Image 1 (tube, rainbow, N blue to C red):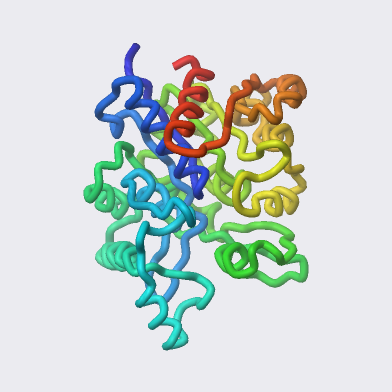
Image 2 (image 1 turned 120 degrees about the vertical axis):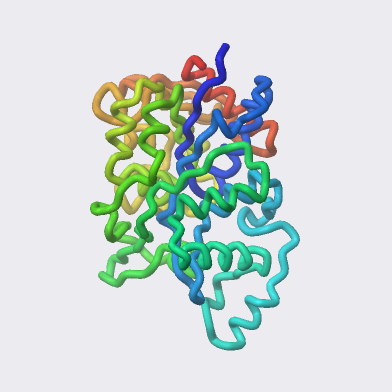
Length: 326
């Protein structure tokens, strides 16, 4: 069987684990040059400027995970990192005292910012970052434009997503999420072509609202998903009615979506009815919802979704590929 061309839409910790599993699944099939087979379109809605440097949290999480240098315990940042510079910034009253920048992590941000100042686009910056480690995947930002996520609270005030998520732990009641400028943005070079030329598109078990949502809202992405002949397979980020990590339930509630595998599938919609999904993977804990999802025109498969380690992540990715018939 020829090597399938896989595109993954991903962001956050769940996305990084799933992408690592997809690479392992390809290697389990005997594919050695996985970067030719695996393209990851990464959410950049989490990005921000802080202390004069450009941060791309989801990009870095996926880069570090594929490189094997991520802090698996925390779910973000570099393993074994120190925080001397972060403490010094706090002494100067700079940055955000509740937003930790590790020293090694800051090195990444400084390198990125320097390249951006020299005129490189985020796409080119990620290409340069990928030369350091054998990632086994081609990473593309969803767009080269800056479209940070802003949380509009019920009282009408507006704060950056990272402040709402990291400082307030999603405790402030959100009315909606916005990505200012996204209507005028364009998909990064290669994104639409990768999707339309894929054999399978996988939607990672990432936050549907603030990780996958911004990718889908970039002009050209939904059109590419509609045009592709590839099967579009999604993996539920909800297991047993609960989010796996983080506060995605608060995000879902803000847009009127119940925290359930069935409701998130309905949110994405059946491709045959103008939505996104050809098939949806749900956890064994949610097997009783399969018939409901099937009734919405989305083929539903039950599989173990807990990504406890790379082997479990690879098995999940393989299940998603099998669901697409590749």
